[in-house]
Image (cartoon, rainbow, N blue to C red):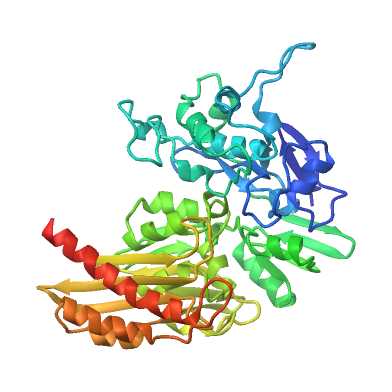
Length: 487
């Protein structure tokens, strides 16, 4: 097998002698690329942001910003990375480099003070600068809203990047001032070529291994042989365990590039979403086709995390406060589970069995998520957290209702943060089904919803607050539907 290598700023570099758990952040800094910083080591500050060439949605290749502090460098075997240092164009000998347009705008508009977070902001800004359809949303006459610039720049591209001293206005000004990549721009030209093909990796050092097989079949055979292996896709959860809790694994198995887990198919009766597609890829490929998912995505962590995180990973951890399970429960989704013996389909409502426990057997993977069609027309996702974006839920509630002639024909409600597992609000669904969609019905159902689950008190919220927010979520949904009708 070919030795593991990574291309950084156009130069191919061997990964050895780094340990398999070494992050991209540490790997880069050890090689003198110190613009990439460690701020939090858990994917919340963006100081470590770098660009990775990934399969594109509108072009063959997209430049995607990721948290270098979470991704094992072995996971980028055969791939291309650009750091803040690599964005500038090198000058002739004895002459300074030419700043990249996003670097230039950050400099002239005062977007940097201490400079610690600046390289990460620059990389995230560059990813949005090179987004192929950005300019299609430009509005030269003015801003579409407070979060989008006249140049089509989506400020959500910078979510997950924190500034501790400059303040965000000059950074926003810089983002809203960047223009369009020129035809001579090498990174813009790179989008027209295919991204690096996935490579099989077996990187072993000091009795630990990072393995990526070429096919799902090979991966499932490996997991049968090594059922205790840690399975990773975007590493947004495992990376935190490695950094903060110093966890190590004898064997880490990567599934993020397996083609069988990266398909998205719209069939006559269902939409099947590959478990290893990133949330950003799903969001852009569905393009609002599943409205409830479209409401979820902007509230799920940050763009930096969504560029790596997957539905399979979010469901695989079994967390009771994951944001996707309530939405998928409301959508009546099911999971396609695969092992070396074959596949089976399990309703998500039957998947969770206890705190971070599920029916998934050792050696079994989530291959895909299936969302049945047709979709309910009345939907909402309400996430209650201390921050508007990039925060963990105190409570999450997802609603999907069929309302015909003023009668609730069907109601599906998924809840997170109120029990040891994500749950369906079955009693509330029953309280709504067959009833008129009126204030009286909704107020009675809201009282039922407040009693669903077994919420606990912790540093995020009290049990009483969580219960109260459940009821308020249903009242908010009703208010939204009546406002829509009256308008």
